[in-house]
Image 1 (tube, rainbow, N blue to C red):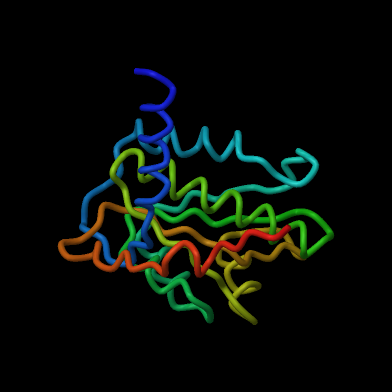
Image 2 (image 1 turned 135 degrees about the vertical axis):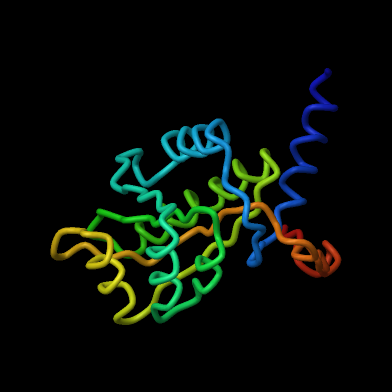
Length: 172
């Protein structure tokens, strides 16, 4: 395979990432989970400090309880697994930066195995309640989650996008 072919395959993978919020009741294979964990480990982050931890949740009851907290993570209820990102920096901006990078890479690693994902966000009191539910020490909160699972039948609709020239502008 030449570099151009490899680049096209990679770009195709990047363009095919979609939010999946409905999942089939199928467990994730250990090799896929291992690859996703390794991608988490190698994800870029603020100053390469790795001031985060990802809690991997497969217990159905815990996923359901997290999905019921205030925010936008209801899709956790039907997921085979959830990744809950715990940021440890004192800077909310840097935490948000790291959480965004990590969550997107989790989704891409999952997609490489045919697994769907959706990024979620906990809000308000849901953040502290999630920390309590997950047994985190006082002062730790969570904001970003990623639901993972094989897409349910019909879950991969959409894909509509504006034309590139409406989104990307050249500036001199």
